[in-house]
Length: 85
Image (cartoon, rainbow, N blue to C red; front, side, top):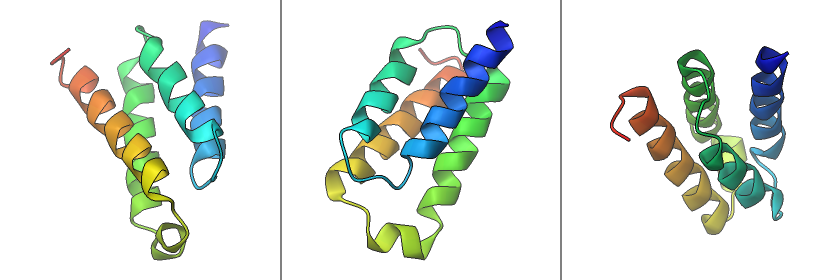
């Protein structure tokens, strides 16, 4: 059941990527508050954020505050994956 929980967090991230509302920061903050996300899930999230940033169409419509939110989350997840936190 716990695997489903982490899958739902990843799904929330995927939903929020590209949105232009409070949901970006809400999802990012929720993920940061969750201290036991499995490494394979953090790697998937990093990949999803990278794919989003490599999509020029998505980036044309991205707000700067949302871009900063995702970059900050990606940095945080990278540190978790590298065991720097």
